Image (cartoon, rainbow, N blue to C red; front, side, top):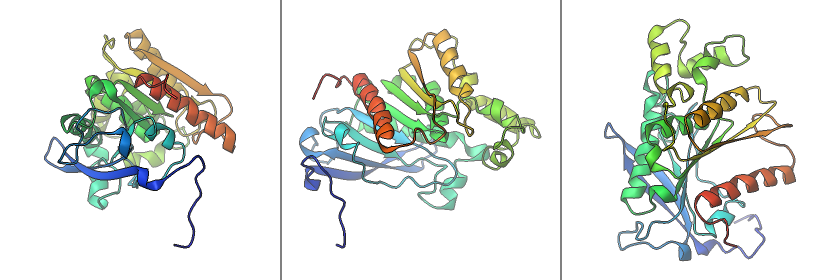
Length: 291
């Protein structure tokens, strides 16, 4: 070892454990899940799976062939130390399992990204890691599209959905080539202006278009966006939340007034932003009153 990052606050690496699990998607594909938790806060059975459903935060992205590798996070310790299991669903559309994994979650195969995430959530419930009333889904940008889509597909699986700078009005944006990123995005989603089948396919999963008339059974939703975001305009989550509220869903919208797609700048402002999202997550999980 050449160097190890110091972590303040009495952090001890051996207090935490990690595991790779596998869910089975609708078409039989095995989808990997990475899990991390604090050993004394989670009870496992003899098979190494959950013996008592724990609060769990399930993260997903699944686009642009980006691999979401497991990584260490200092602020995540505040969740783990409160007994929250953190999991990453390595859904198709990412690059974790090679080029075919990406191709299996883009263009005409995009729905695989959403159904893979739902399969991972169901696996974690069936395996005893958590329960629907103790699980929060989390994703941003293209992962925010994922959040909107899975909320429409399986609202019963989650107590809360955290969507950061979410691409939830995807069809409207991708139909406007005057926007700075639309034309290059056709490679990822298809061009609905030129192909009616692409239009119909995107229309079938775009979160805004698929909010039902009655969404009172939806989980609690927090959409976080930025006024100066040029990648996903703030109007997308604003429209989405307005439609959700009109349908009876418990949805909140938080707009950062001096930030872009990557959130606020500055170390302390970023920590404050993370603390807000963690506080909301802990409240949904029923842990807000714990130290």
